[in-house]
Length: 238
Ligand SMILES: NC(=O)c1ccc[n+]([C@@H]2O[C@H](COP(=O)([O-])OP(=O)(O)OC[C@H]3O[C@@H](n4cnc5c(N)ncnc54)[C@H](OP(=O)(O)O)[C@@H]3O)[C@@H](O)[C@H]2O)c1
Image 1: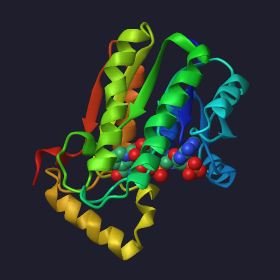
Image 2: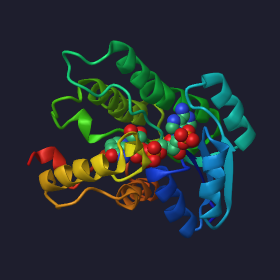
Image 3: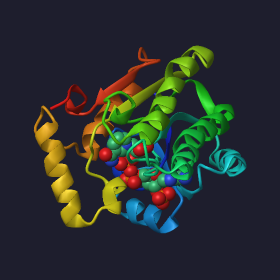
């Protein structure tokens, strides 16, 4: 079987990085991308296998088309980039931050997937990453939840429109990644302890938990139009 090539937008840390590691271990050729070359170099130094790292900004649609043309044909795309903007109580949340959150997540996912299309193999796949905020009715997440719901809405539409390309999504719960680095370490520990107590499996997630769900969707050629919720059950309420 020919070696399959996976491109991860947002592969220098967290869920994207863990996905790169698992698929390199399975013999895939992997290209990781992100904005910071420094972070990409650091990631590259701790991964082994057929790996390339390319700096790009997914909010720049023209730049994405050029970057994908440089990468050349590939089989699978994982969109593991996101935004921390747009969280907060509905009555007071800044509309500018909500708009930035949409730009940095929804637009960036949309633009990346669109730019990748001419290079993606017909029987390959796209995996979007949304979030539990899209469907868990958590107060204080209207802005960020709406953006993640928009990403989730793309999955079945594109699965139908782009067939035979497969299009899936993963919706993570609270995962211990650098996404949370806007909090000081002690605040982060306390927030994670609180979320762990509300999560049926009794802990927050690790990036490897979500990477396993992504790897499943990439490898199972009968899966399309589906979003796997990988949240330890936190959406069920605690
Ligand atoms: N962690 C959680 O609790 C959680 C929960 C639910 C959903 N999610 C979602 O899961 C996805 C992955 O998050 P994570 O937790 O793994 O975050 P992370 O560790 O912060 O990783 C984000 C990755 O995306 C890259 N990135 C960010 N903006 C980019 C842009 N405009 N263009 C290209 N690359 C960009 C980052 O590198 P650079 O900064 O160098 O660009 C990094 O490689 C996100 O969509 C996030 O919303 C996370």
